[in-house]
Image (tube, rainbow, N blue to C red; front, side):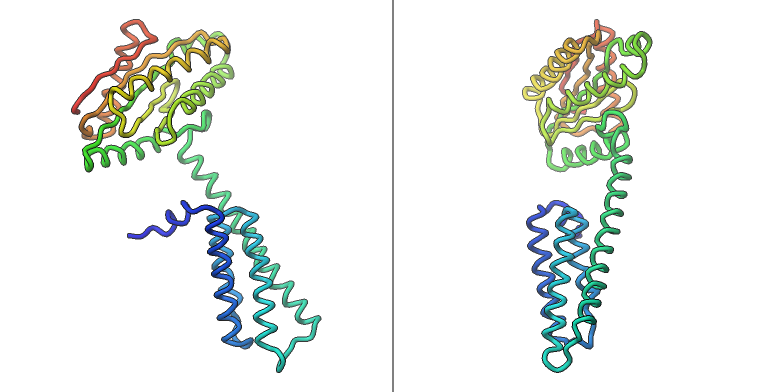
Length: 284
């Protein structure tokens, strides 16, 4: 089934503006040929709503102004020369139309901003701004389905901050929060855009590397650990990191099973001295 929202969400603003212009001109032509007795004002809202929701605020305002201008031209041309409006009436109607378009666009912009804020709260960790555990489970389920359907390999790594409790106890939770944000940002900068990182809670993070085999994922995880240790050293945080990683040659049965496997390896890394990576290959 065609997902129109997903389709337009992926389009660039330039495409949306061009589409908006074409729609406004099309509505203007229909408005002109149907005559001034039939009102077409509401149909100008289609391109306005489209560009405002999926594009930027400025693009929405520009579409409002274009719709206003096209409406005036269509209305005057349809009336001319039999029934021209007196200038005061034309001016008044024009102001009402422009105000109607702009107010509608502004209300939609506020709704869009509120929707995006709620979506952010639903999918992001409030502190680090990484994905939260609930949204990660959704993404991981999709990745497992793709791996199963197309027989693809992927790697998942679970990491825990060694001695993080000492940071909170000795320096306070504010310092601990700053450390968590630094960890999240460091991981994010160390991976590809297609990779996924989430904070599962406390001082535990999980990384998913789609279509990444053992030979390719091993240096990535090592790079993440090195970058984390370097940033901790620069900022004076006496912590290290224990990693558990699994490269899945075949998709695991569930997300819970996947997380259980990497979580077990992470605790094995802690028990074997901390600040290390336990990485295996499995057919799940």
